[in-house]
Image (cartoon, rainbow, N blue to C red; front, side, top):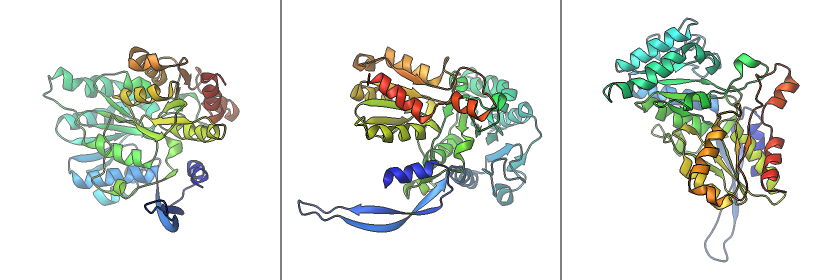
Length: 369
């Protein structure tokens, strides 16, 4: 039941309330298992992001949101739905279509003591503002000898969506993770999105927060703890989403779900995959990856970005340079997007991005099966 429920949730259905089963275990050899139906609250990634911003806007009057269509239109993807009505024009600010301009305003506001959230309608458009992100935001704290922090969050959808072709389908995880001075976050599920966005807003460093358009409408179970206003996830800590003993799968964002789906298929063939959700690209939690590789002796990285100088390439290098290298029984395998600009045709687009079957093939190749 659990595996079918996870597959259903990852399919994109907008589930708000489903019924799950909880097992209660007694103590001793005569323990009796009881099952009790109870409602499980599920929250979409979109709503988790909205809640995080709402709570941080309420908590700290220095926080404000600016970007294209974030106010009166409730955001291009409705992530900022209701915030303009609640907080008004001074804190939820619509901007002209000028990324260089409003990103510069946001960086200046951060230098002046505010805590802006700068939304790009897509990170493809952040190229228009990359000088502000890299030269103004990322380097100022270092260049001022620690005297001038720049507490800003750049957020928006990243990576491939569907049918938007080459100029709107790039993954910028490796681009921004290459730059010292930035923290780069890439959440997968609703808990990641909520906890990491709250941490990013509270952080005194500039944070690039990479969402995924195809994940906005997907629902995930949220624990009672993760619904708390005090709930945060530390930036720089990966999470083991599934325990395994034969091979380690490391991924981020949408492709964590692909890895879990592949692991479920492989489990039926007796192959147990350990799935690591990176959550943060920079700083990268190399220790968690190494610990898993030392246990499984095999590693496959999965990402939607291009292969050259990508996140997977960095993971390969860090493992090769560290203590886990001696535990590898086979070379590390990368599953990535194809090294071409994204085609528009749907069939070609599907062949340009990692699919579950590609992960399964790579795992079997790594295990020499």
